Length: 99
Image 1 (spheres, one colour):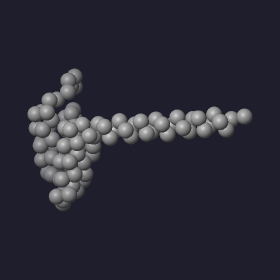
Image 2 (image 1 turned 120 degrees about the vertical axis):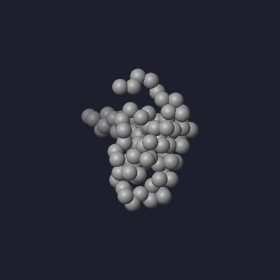
Image 3 (image 1 turned 90 degrees about the horizontal axis):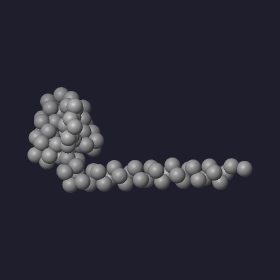
């Protein structure tokens, strides 16, 4: 089990290996340090085996670029904040409806 985070060079190697595995129809390895968006995109490539399209490969590469530049994490934080706000709004509405 990993206790540290991979550096960018290791992430790049892990993505390259993950993409190679996906193109060969093999599953994604664990503890790669790849985020959910990148892993999901690689799984889509795997599911398409042996007919992975250039669009699927480009989507995986774009997801990985988002991991490296932080935009995936920012999108995930924004989605979590939206979800929390939605829950709070429902709770407040339920409190107002109580007698």
